Image 1 (cartoon, rainbow, N blue to C red):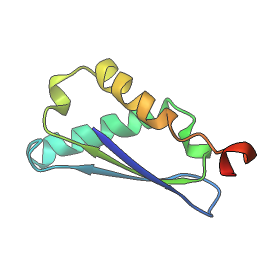
Image 2: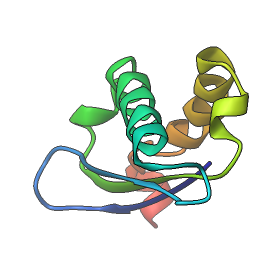
Image 3: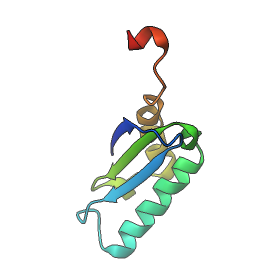
Image 4: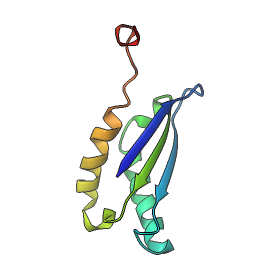
Length: 88
């Protein structure tokens, strides 16, 4: 799983989910998107002002929901707003 992000001026998160056709057919890819949305709902990421793209790669469904969530949470934890000291 890959996560790309950039700050935005909207004030809340905008999230895009991309699932490769290598993951499976349309039904399987829709299942992956639903799982990623459920993982996002369990976090507080929606209140942060970022544009986020989450890319699920082949092998996503070979892991359990909890294992995938354990992979996604550290990636989303990097989205902490910079303090004034870090901006300098």
